[in-house]
Image (cartoon, helix red, strand yellow):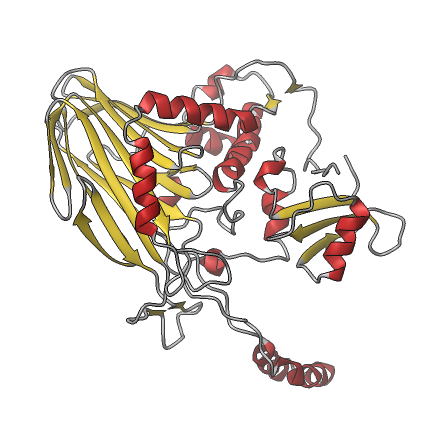
Length: 468
């Protein structure tokens, strides 16, 4: 069957169907990020990275979308039903404080927390303190981030990508003069971790907590199991240098006087399915991170980038969308354009860029074979993130996936139907259903609808939706 994904707004005559490649699909800034929200997101559906673009002390914050606190538990409250009549009675009497107290006793435990994995820190040695020509970019055409600047008469360039086909992050460091690249790299985490040197690689081994509180007033905030429960994870970093020297320690790798450097980063968690204990029944993350590194380390940045761009553009290039022709606005940094726009200045190209940025984010954080996008996509820097950065069936599935132009991002996880009238009012209703283990390809609409309602799968039903 064909699955219809509604577009959230009507595309005007500015929608182009040809093969034109746009040069203005770029977020760019003339300064580094100073806070996490200003960093540029990269992702391959499993590994997420936030690139700050600092000049001397570069930080790349890392996530894996299977890294959560906790372990499998029913999440039910068997005593909840007995409080329902008490809630109703208190509401009917106007005693809402009492009703709220009973209502809290009906609830089950709060969900687990989606967690940050690690930080990759690059501390660069630069001779000159004067920096000119700084530019930090996110190219939506190629899903790559870059930083360029001039220091001491040398032009430095740093390119970063996260590849879905090869499941690896790669960083390319170059300069237009020889022997000018020197830095110290380390890996850290906000969770329990330690680092070791292993097979000419710097390796971070970490452990997730079994419990993270959802309110500051709770007596226990972050709890680790000393015996073994809780998800394990590993991050592995290797370097390939042209010229210069490389020295590994148990906590750092140090590059001196190189002409060019390529950094390879692989990672994995012990996640072994929603119904398996990640600490006691989990996979060995070391085996996977080693396999990914071994498979990709012999490849050059150019080879990995070519495969990455081909895969990404097979999704992104399905839509060409342009508005307006304000060349002067397009020459400004993206943050300045946003300020002008908020002040009432027209910038139609910024609207088109914003639309394509949303598509880029969904491609980057939701791919087949990995969990769907959570409340923050896949990018999170907090051990106690807002709303747990979790899954909320009531809204977030709709917000993240409705309007997608690539059903691959939801295949096997979320599915939409519009030819169902659930309330018999004559209008079609949009249904979002979660399919975690059921193959629905080839099923008719009626067969899928029967599965949805007969097997009590989680649903979101939007009444009276119509096709645009």
